[in-house]
Length: 86
Image (tube, rainbow, N blue to C red; front, top):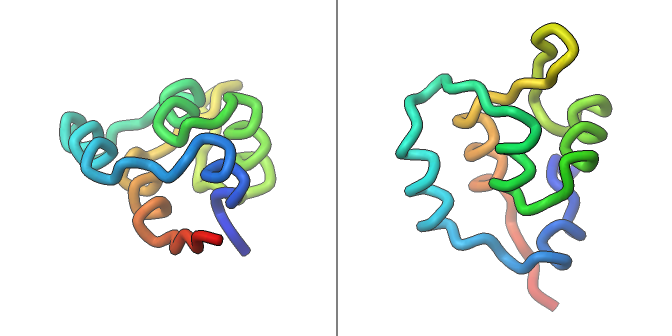
């Protein structure tokens, strides 16, 4: 089961891992991210992030009515994905 749809990378291109690492390193471990922050980080639409959270394809928790995500877990998902170029 793919946690992040391969289409996300086809639509927006392969992420620059150095840039992603530097953005995550600016935050402390354990920082909770909003749907908007995760969407910007993954370069997908906010509704895609919500759908992936509801279907448990992204690790998330509900705080009240809002979804929250651990930045370290989002980074771990990205680093574990192998992208196959056609």
